[in-house]
Length: 356
Image (cartoon, rainbow, N blue to C red; front, side):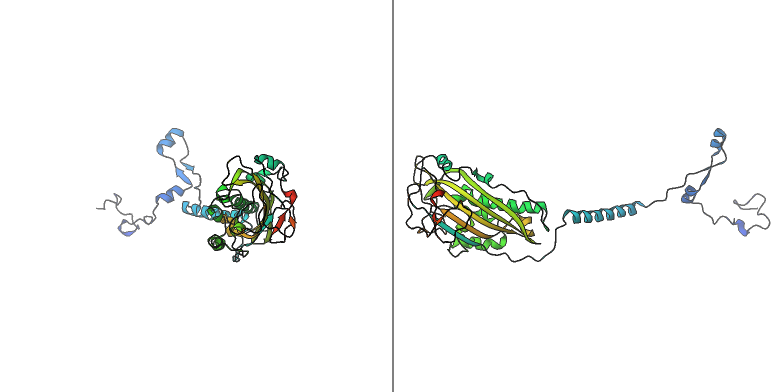
Protein backbone atom coordinates (compact mmCIF):
# COMPACT_ATOMS: atom_id res chain seq x y z
CA UNK A 1 0.00 0.00 0.00
CA UNK A 2 1.22 3.43 -0.85
CA UNK A 3 1.79 6.21 1.60
CA UNK A 4 -0.64 9.08 2.18
CA UNK A 5 1.18 11.21 -0.38
CA UNK A 6 1.34 8.52 -3.12
CA UNK A 7 -1.12 8.01 -5.97
CA UNK A 8 -3.79 5.35 -5.40
CA UNK A 9 -2.23 3.18 -8.04
CA UNK A 10 1.15 3.53 -6.40
CA UNK A 11 4.25 5.14 -7.68
CA UNK A 12 4.38 5.22 -11.46
CA UNK A 13 6.86 2.89 -13.03
CA UNK A 14 10.10 4.69 -13.69
CA UNK A 15 9.24 7.48 -11.23
CA UNK A 16 11.60 8.74 -8.56
CA UNK A 17 12.17 6.58 -5.54
CA UNK A 18 10.19 7.36 -2.42
CA UNK A 19 7.66 9.47 -4.31
CA UNK A 20 10.05 12.41 -4.57
CA UNK A 21 8.73 14.83 -7.16
CA UNK A 22 11.49 16.40 -9.21
CA UNK A 23 9.74 19.81 -8.92
CA UNK A 24 9.38 19.78 -5.15
CA UNK A 25 12.67 21.64 -4.79
CA UNK A 26 11.17 24.66 -6.58
CA UNK A 27 9.54 26.98 -4.01
CA UNK A 28 7.16 29.67 -5.24
CA UNK A 29 7.31 32.23 -2.44
CA UNK A 30 5.08 35.30 -2.18
CA UNK A 31 7.53 37.66 -3.85
CA UNK A 32 7.86 35.30 -6.81
CA UNK A 33 4.10 35.05 -7.20
CA UNK A 34 3.64 38.82 -7.00
CA UNK A 35 6.32 39.39 -9.60
CA UNK A 36 4.60 37.11 -12.14
CA UNK A 37 3.52 38.92 -15.29
CA UNK A 38 0.55 36.52 -15.78
CA UNK A 39 -2.07 35.78 -13.18
CA UNK A 40 -4.77 33.12 -13.37
CA UNK A 41 -8.31 34.27 -12.84
CA UNK A 42 -10.26 32.56 -10.16
CA UNK A 43 -13.05 30.18 -11.11
CA UNK A 44 -15.66 32.66 -9.93
CA UNK A 45 -14.07 35.42 -12.09
CA UNK A 46 -14.06 33.16 -15.15
CA UNK A 47 -17.72 32.18 -14.64
CA UNK A 48 -18.87 35.74 -14.12
CA UNK A 49 -16.94 37.66 -16.72
CA UNK A 50 -16.25 34.90 -19.24
CA UNK A 51 -12.70 36.17 -19.15
CA UNK A 52 -9.66 34.28 -20.38
CA UNK A 53 -8.02 31.96 -17.95
CA UNK A 54 -5.21 34.37 -17.26
CA UNK A 55 -4.66 38.11 -17.23
CA UNK A 56 -1.55 40.23 -17.59
CA UNK A 57 -0.45 42.09 -14.44
CA UNK A 58 1.18 45.50 -14.55
CA UNK A 59 4.90 45.32 -13.90
CA UNK A 60 6.04 46.07 -10.38
CA UNK A 61 7.79 49.40 -9.89
CA UNK A 62 11.40 48.97 -9.12
CA UNK A 63 12.69 52.02 -7.23
CA UNK A 64 15.05 53.16 -4.49
CA UNK A 65 14.39 51.92 -0.99
CA UNK A 66 13.13 54.42 1.56
CA UNK A 67 16.50 54.52 3.34
CA UNK A 68 18.35 55.19 0.10
CA UNK A 69 15.90 57.94 -0.83
CA UNK A 70 16.30 59.66 2.55
CA UNK A 71 20.09 59.46 2.26
CA UNK A 72 19.96 60.99 -1.20
CA UNK A 73 17.77 63.85 0.05
CA UNK A 74 20.12 64.58 2.97
CA UNK A 75 23.13 64.72 0.66
CA UNK A 76 21.28 67.03 -1.72
CA UNK A 77 20.24 69.29 1.18
CA UNK A 78 23.80 69.53 2.52
CA UNK A 79 25.15 70.28 -0.94
CA UNK A 80 22.53 72.97 -1.52
CA UNK A 81 23.24 74.57 1.86
CA UNK A 82 26.94 74.75 1.09
CA UNK A 83 26.23 76.45 -2.23
CA UNK A 84 23.82 78.91 -0.57
CA UNK A 85 26.29 79.87 2.13
CA UNK A 86 28.95 80.45 -0.49
CA UNK A 87 26.65 82.76 -2.42
CA UNK A 88 25.22 84.47 0.66
CA UNK A 89 28.63 85.27 2.18
CA UNK A 90 31.00 85.66 -0.75
CA UNK A 91 33.26 88.06 1.15
CA UNK A 92 34.20 85.83 4.06
CA UNK A 93 37.87 85.02 4.23
CA UNK A 94 39.91 83.45 6.95
CA UNK A 95 42.74 85.70 8.11
CA UNK A 96 44.82 86.21 11.21
CA UNK A 97 43.51 89.16 13.18
CA UNK A 98 45.74 92.23 13.16
CA UNK A 99 46.73 93.86 16.49
CA UNK A 100 44.40 96.65 17.62
CA UNK A 101 46.04 100.06 17.72
CA UNK A 102 45.70 102.20 20.86
CA UNK A 103 43.65 105.37 20.55
CA UNK A 104 45.61 108.51 19.67
CA UNK A 105 43.80 111.61 20.93
CA UNK A 106 44.15 115.38 20.79
CA UNK A 107 41.98 117.78 22.80
CA UNK A 108 42.36 121.46 21.95
CA UNK A 109 40.64 124.07 24.16
CA UNK A 110 39.49 127.26 22.41
CA UNK A 111 39.55 130.42 24.51
CA UNK A 112 37.11 133.31 23.80
CA UNK A 113 38.48 136.69 22.85
CA UNK A 114 36.11 138.51 25.21
CA UNK A 115 33.13 137.85 27.42
CA UNK A 116 31.03 134.79 26.63
CA UNK A 117 27.67 135.89 25.15
CA UNK A 118 24.58 134.87 27.10
CA UNK A 119 20.79 135.03 26.97
CA UNK A 120 17.92 133.70 29.06
CA UNK A 121 16.48 131.82 26.05
CA UNK A 122 18.50 128.95 24.59
CA UNK A 123 16.46 128.99 21.38
CA UNK A 124 17.36 132.63 20.85
CA UNK A 125 21.05 131.82 21.17
CA UNK A 126 20.78 128.90 18.74
CA UNK A 127 18.90 131.07 16.24
CA UNK A 128 21.63 133.73 16.30
CA UNK A 129 24.55 131.32 15.99
CA UNK A 130 26.09 129.26 13.16
CA UNK A 131 24.08 126.31 14.57
CA UNK A 132 20.74 127.89 13.58
CA UNK A 133 20.11 125.26 10.89
CA UNK A 134 21.57 122.30 12.73
CA UNK A 135 19.39 119.29 13.48
CA UNK A 136 18.53 118.11 16.97
CA UNK A 137 20.27 115.13 18.56
CA UNK A 138 20.78 111.93 16.59
CA UNK A 139 18.91 113.41 13.61
CA UNK A 140 22.06 115.38 12.95
CA UNK A 141 23.99 112.12 12.44
CA UNK A 142 22.28 110.53 9.43
CA UNK A 143 23.70 107.37 7.88
CA UNK A 144 24.95 107.88 4.34
CA UNK A 145 23.84 105.73 1.44
CA UNK A 146 26.00 102.63 1.82
CA UNK A 147 27.50 100.53 -0.91
CA UNK A 148 29.37 97.28 -0.80
CA UNK A 149 33.13 97.31 -1.23
CA UNK A 150 35.42 94.80 -2.87
CA UNK A 151 35.49 92.57 0.22
CA UNK A 152 32.53 93.72 2.35
CA UNK A 153 28.80 93.44 1.65
CA UNK A 154 26.17 96.15 1.97
CA UNK A 155 25.04 94.80 5.33
CA UNK A 156 28.59 94.83 6.69
CA UNK A 157 29.13 98.45 5.64
CA UNK A 158 25.82 99.42 7.24
CA UNK A 159 26.84 97.60 10.42
CA UNK A 160 30.08 99.60 10.62
CA UNK A 161 28.29 102.91 10.05
CA UNK A 162 25.58 102.06 12.60
CA UNK A 163 28.11 101.11 15.28
CA UNK A 164 30.04 104.34 14.70
CA UNK A 165 26.81 106.34 14.98
CA UNK A 166 25.86 104.55 18.20
CA UNK A 167 29.23 105.41 19.68
CA UNK A 168 28.88 109.08 18.71
CA UNK A 169 25.36 109.32 20.15
CA UNK A 170 26.28 107.68 23.44
CA UNK A 171 29.54 109.57 23.88
CA UNK A 172 28.30 113.07 22.98
CA UNK A 173 24.50 113.20 23.38
CA UNK A 174 23.61 111.06 26.41
CA UNK A 175 22.88 113.36 29.41
CA UNK A 176 24.07 110.67 31.84
CA UNK A 177 27.47 110.78 30.12
CA UNK A 178 27.59 114.54 29.60
CA UNK A 179 26.86 115.65 33.16
CA UNK A 180 27.28 112.41 35.10
CA UNK A 181 29.75 109.67 35.84
CA UNK A 182 28.25 107.12 33.49
CA UNK A 183 30.39 105.77 30.68
CA UNK A 184 29.59 102.05 30.53
CA UNK A 185 27.24 102.61 27.59
CA UNK A 186 30.24 103.92 25.65
CA UNK A 187 32.66 101.27 26.88
CA UNK A 188 30.59 98.31 25.66
CA UNK A 189 30.91 99.53 22.05
CA UNK A 190 34.71 99.33 22.08
CA UNK A 191 36.81 96.45 20.86
CA UNK A 192 37.89 94.32 23.83
CA UNK A 193 41.55 94.99 23.06
CA UNK A 194 41.00 98.70 23.81
CA UNK A 195 39.22 98.28 27.13
CA UNK A 196 42.41 98.39 29.19
CA UNK A 197 43.35 101.74 27.68
CA UNK A 198 39.82 103.04 28.23
CA UNK A 199 39.75 101.93 31.87
CA UNK A 200 43.22 103.35 32.51
CA UNK A 201 42.09 106.70 31.08
CA UNK A 202 39.32 107.05 33.66
CA UNK A 203 41.25 105.56 36.55
CA UNK A 204 44.37 107.69 35.97
CA UNK A 205 43.70 110.54 33.49
CA UNK A 206 46.81 111.93 31.81
CA UNK A 207 47.49 114.52 29.12
CA UNK A 208 49.73 112.13 27.20
CA UNK A 209 47.68 111.76 24.06
CA UNK A 210 46.51 108.30 25.17
CA UNK A 211 44.64 108.57 28.47
CA UNK A 212 42.35 111.62 28.46
CA UNK A 213 38.69 110.77 29.17
CA UNK A 214 37.68 113.78 27.04
CA UNK A 215 39.30 112.04 24.10
CA UNK A 216 36.87 109.14 24.46
CA UNK A 217 33.71 111.15 25.19
CA UNK A 218 32.29 114.59 26.02
CA UNK A 219 31.65 115.28 29.69
CA UNK A 220 31.32 118.25 32.01
CA UNK A 221 31.70 118.64 35.74
CA UNK A 222 28.14 118.36 37.16
CA UNK A 223 29.22 120.46 40.18
CA UNK A 224 29.90 123.37 37.82
CA UNK A 225 27.73 122.96 34.75
CA UNK A 226 24.35 121.60 33.72
CA UNK A 227 22.42 121.34 30.49
CA UNK A 228 19.99 124.20 29.95
CA UNK A 229 18.46 122.43 26.96
CA UNK A 230 18.61 118.71 26.18
CA UNK A 231 17.93 119.44 22.49
CA UNK A 232 21.61 119.45 21.49
CA UNK A 233 22.30 120.74 17.98
CA UNK A 234 24.40 118.53 15.70
CA UNK A 235 25.74 118.58 12.17
CA UNK A 236 28.34 116.45 10.42
CA UNK A 237 29.06 113.46 8.23
CA UNK A 238 29.97 109.78 8.25
CA UNK A 239 32.05 108.08 5.56
CA UNK A 240 33.00 104.42 5.19
CA UNK A 241 35.86 103.00 3.12
CA UNK A 242 37.72 99.72 2.82
CA UNK A 243 41.38 99.97 3.78
CA UNK A 244 42.25 96.35 2.96
CA UNK A 245 40.53 93.02 2.44
CA UNK A 246 39.92 92.56 6.18
CA UNK A 247 39.31 96.13 7.42
CA UNK A 248 36.67 98.81 7.11
CA UNK A 249 37.27 102.36 8.31
CA UNK A 250 34.63 104.95 9.19
CA UNK A 251 35.49 108.64 9.49
CA UNK A 252 33.13 110.83 11.53
CA UNK A 253 33.30 114.62 11.58
CA UNK A 254 30.61 116.34 13.66
CA UNK A 255 30.03 119.61 15.47
CA UNK A 256 27.93 119.60 18.64
CA UNK A 257 26.46 122.72 20.22
CA UNK A 258 25.30 122.60 23.87
CA UNK A 259 23.23 125.15 25.78
CA UNK A 260 24.71 125.37 29.29
CA UNK A 261 24.24 127.29 32.50
CA UNK A 262 25.86 127.25 35.90
CA UNK A 263 24.91 124.34 38.15
CA UNK A 264 24.37 126.85 40.98
CA UNK A 265 22.08 129.13 38.97
CA UNK A 266 18.29 128.95 38.74
CA UNK A 267 16.23 128.52 35.59
CA UNK A 268 16.20 132.29 34.99
CA UNK A 269 19.98 132.55 34.74
CA UNK A 270 21.57 133.30 31.39
CA UNK A 271 22.44 130.48 29.07
CA UNK A 272 25.55 130.25 26.89
CA UNK A 273 26.50 127.99 24.01
CA UNK A 274 29.40 125.57 24.08
CA UNK A 275 30.74 124.05 20.86
CA UNK A 276 32.62 120.76 20.40
CA UNK A 277 34.05 119.66 17.08
CA UNK A 278 34.98 115.97 17.00
CA UNK A 279 36.75 114.06 14.26
CA UNK A 280 36.78 110.34 15.02
CA UNK A 281 38.33 107.51 13.04
CA UNK A 282 36.88 104.05 13.61
CA UNK A 283 38.28 100.76 12.38
CA UNK A 284 36.37 97.49 12.00
CA UNK A 285 37.52 93.97 11.31
CA UNK A 286 35.13 91.07 10.83
CA UNK A 287 35.06 90.28 14.54
CA UNK A 288 34.01 93.87 15.30
CA UNK A 289 31.26 93.73 12.68
CA UNK A 290 29.93 90.52 14.19
CA UNK A 291 30.13 91.77 17.81
CA UNK A 292 28.85 95.33 17.12
CA UNK A 293 32.04 96.87 18.48
CA UNK A 294 34.56 99.36 17.09
CA UNK A 295 38.22 100.25 17.31
CA UNK A 296 38.52 103.98 17.94
CA UNK A 297 41.99 104.83 16.60
CA UNK A 298 41.94 108.65 16.26
CA UNK A 299 40.08 111.28 18.29
CA UNK A 300 40.63 114.93 17.41
CA UNK A 301 38.63 117.40 19.51
CA UNK A 302 38.26 121.20 19.50
CA UNK A 303 36.09 122.67 22.24
CA UNK A 304 35.21 126.15 23.49
CA UNK A 305 34.77 128.54 25.06
CA UNK A 306 37.38 127.18 27.46
CA UNK A 307 40.22 128.69 29.38
CA UNK A 308 43.61 127.39 28.34
CA UNK A 309 44.61 127.59 32.01
CA UNK A 310 42.07 124.90 32.89
CA UNK A 311 42.92 121.21 32.56
CA UNK A 312 40.61 119.65 29.95
CA UNK A 313 42.00 116.14 30.32
CA UNK A 314 39.42 114.61 32.65
CA UNK A 315 36.42 116.91 32.17
CA UNK A 316 35.63 120.00 30.13
CA UNK A 317 35.16 123.20 32.18
CA UNK A 318 33.22 125.60 29.92
CA UNK A 319 33.30 129.35 30.41
CA UNK A 320 29.70 130.38 30.91
CA UNK A 321 27.75 133.55 30.10
CA UNK A 322 29.65 136.72 31.05
CA UNK A 323 32.93 134.94 31.87
CA UNK A 324 36.29 135.60 30.24
CA UNK A 325 39.34 133.42 29.72
CA UNK A 326 42.42 133.78 31.87
CA UNK A 327 44.70 132.97 28.99
CA UNK A 328 44.34 132.71 25.22
CA UNK A 329 45.93 130.80 22.40
CA UNK A 330 48.21 131.86 19.58
CA UNK A 331 45.59 132.11 16.84
CA UNK A 332 41.85 132.26 16.29
CA UNK A 333 40.25 128.89 15.54
CA UNK A 334 36.74 128.38 14.24
CA UNK A 335 35.29 124.93 15.10
CA UNK A 336 32.60 125.46 12.45
CA UNK A 337 35.25 125.67 9.72
CA UNK A 338 36.62 122.58 7.98
CA UNK A 339 40.27 123.29 8.76
CA UNK A 340 42.03 121.65 11.68
CA UNK A 341 43.74 123.52 14.48
CA UNK A 342 47.42 122.88 14.98
CA UNK A 343 48.02 124.52 18.38
CA UNK A 344 47.48 122.80 21.73
CA UNK A 345 45.38 125.78 22.74
CA UNK A 346 43.60 128.14 20.39
CA UNK A 347 41.41 131.23 20.43
CA UNK A 348 37.74 130.84 19.68
CA UNK A 349 36.87 132.86 16.59
CA UNK A 350 34.40 135.67 17.18
CA UNK A 351 32.17 134.38 14.39
CA UNK A 352 31.76 131.07 16.20
CA UNK A 353 29.88 132.80 19.06
CA UNK A 354 26.19 133.76 18.92
CA UNK A 355 25.44 137.40 18.10
CA UNK A 356 23.35 138.84 20.93
